[in-house]
Amino acid sequence: MTADVVVIGGGIVGCAIAYRFSRAKLEVVLLERGDLGAEASRAALGVLAPRGGTSTQDSFFRLCQAGLQAHRDWEAELGEDGVRVPYKKEGLLELAFSDEKQSQLDEGLRREKALGIRVERLERRELLQMEPAISPGVRQALFYPDHMWVENGQLTEGLGQAARRRGAEVRTHCGAVTLRWEGSRLVGVRTGDQELGAAYVVNAAGCWAASVDGMPARFAPVIPVRGQYIELDDGLQPTFRHIVHGKKTYLVSRPGGKISAGATVEHAGYEKKNTAEGLQGILKAALTMAPALKERAFLGAWSGLRPCSRDGLPILGPAEPANLLLATGHFRGGILLAPVTADLLLEYVQSGHQPELLGPFSPLRFASEG
Ligand SMILES: Cc1cc2nc3c(=O)[nH]c(=O)nc-3n(C[C@H](O)[C@H](O)[C@H](O)COP(=O)(O)OP(=O)(O)OC[C@H]3O[C@@H](n4cnc5c(N)ncnc54)[C@H](O)[C@@H]3O)c2cc1C
Image (cartoon, rainbow, N blue to C red; front, top):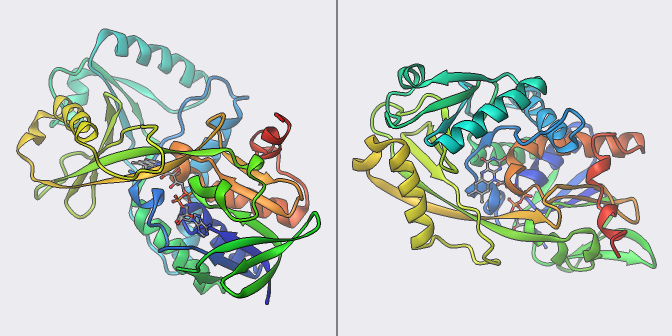
């Protein structure tokens, strides 16, 4: 059997690629060794917030902005394919509880306005009117009206379903996958006792990208960075209208009566678990920001492993040979960046030219490090 594209890994990135490519009428096989979206893509908080830019030339900032726009475009396209995913579009509030944080926000406000980001400063009174559950100890906040939230588990699942509807073959519990080489040519993959020919192979195996059998590991220097989050009962009405961020912790009222709070950022190898210290840190931050949560029922805790590259930036596009494509290293932004990643890889495959936005994230940047 042969396919135009074999995608390895059924997290949000692999599912987005399978969907985008099959919608463009390419023959796609997606290989996932477990269930779709059961790893980092399930554990994420779903916040879609392009941050961290220092100039309009900042390539990562531009990628993140394109990522947010891609979600808007894809929401409509997925609707055409019968998939409706909950988004929250009321924006994000960034809170300051100290003088130091207040000055950081002031600095951020100037820089981000200069970058063209829609952001405004809120004084305490305005903020507490918008979100009455926030502690009166807050100093001020920045409001980002364009930032959004998506139900990431449903989005990943929906992308898998939509890919199937568009003709992709999605194989879960696929068993071991090995890249097949003929000399220096990549000709496809072997899975179980089956050989699949492929014009392109996309490695979207998250923090396991380097360990795919037959993969030249130098193109995928990724390590796992653990994140933990908790869920609390949200009562009868959503506590927060907006996404709230402060003290390195997000608070999100999700549809279905749950509040998610998190997440930690820990270098702890491939050990996916919730720890006493991790949960204590999240609860402390959450209750400082919103003391009203202290009587809420504790519903559960999750953890996942973010794929983080050697320089902290995504690894996207053709390696060597040029039909081996990488789509990993999305670290803390894989939910935000999955649709734009798929759009850019498709553009590359269809045109044979690397889109300009992809250039800075080439896998070849590591190969040349020697
Ligand atoms: C707690 C937490 C909070 C987060 N919050 C956000 C957020 O708010 N916003 C945001 O944008 N991002 C967030 N992230 C980051 C985001 O979750 C990741 O960047 C994203 O999920 C990465 O997607 P992925 O598809 O690359 O990886 P994964 O979801 O890990 O998927 C990789 C898949 O590849 C499969 N696989 C691995 N090896 C093989 C193989 N050899 N053969 C076949 N299959 C294989 C795995 O089983 C897995 O299903 C968060 C992450 C965590 C942990």
